[in-house]
Length: 173
Length: 173
Image (cartoon, rainbow over all chains, first blue to last red; front, side):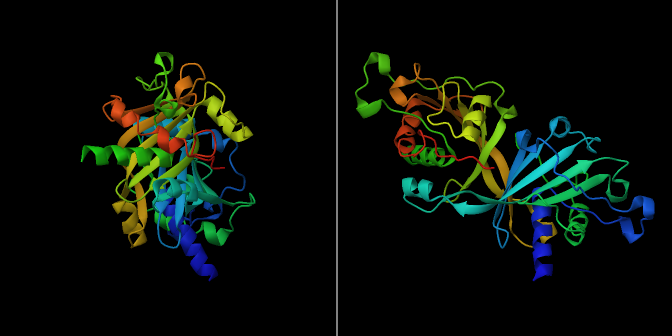
């Protein structure tokens, strides 16, 4: 069950931008060990919108993807790879029907964010995260505590498949 | 068909925050005629996130709902009614599968914003929009042109049913 939960998080993660890392080819030395975020970047809830996403299936989630100023500038200018200082945040929520909206519509069609489920981050830092594609990955539960290493290790294999510098999310105009 | 399109827009509108107005009880005098937005509020794409939404059915849409500083402050402090100067923007997009994400997942589960479809606004101004609940409503097509009056008139009947000062969207933490 635990393993399934990890996989689900990894999938959620890939879908909505964010993930974690393992050393390239599993052969990183001491200086290139993967490093994960241990603190939530401050002020993220005031950052600007990159895009939104929705995962069906077991995840049944909404993501609001926000970026700090460096991220927004890079997205708008199409800069790849993303420069150092880029931070991308994926705020995840349940995908739940809105009773109020559906009553007005007279049918089941409207979905809104339910309770938050987690927040995930990608931080670009060429030196600090050299072992993991120059991205540091973070996952934080609703109590503010980071996900454990086993969880964080699941992210990189997904993000390595993204075609734009390990990032899945595109900019919504 | 045209009427159906109007209805759909009205429904979309209600679901994701925004709509238009008719004079209360249809008896407004000259000074209380409904007034709709004719220009897109500047800088809206840099505003902060209020929430996201998804409509199924014919709409098949994503909404990213953003607010100017007055709106964000009111939402965070739970201020009702919203103060003059509040502006809420709903950026609408198609709700489309992500081929890239689904290839990584190995199943059809990931949805991302497709092309933008319209942008809608609610502007709080007690004097200017006295005829319409103190809210001015706007709908802009992808070419930047406002929706016509017949369309705008469909919005108020929905928003009048919202329980929080004509606003459906709640704040996503």
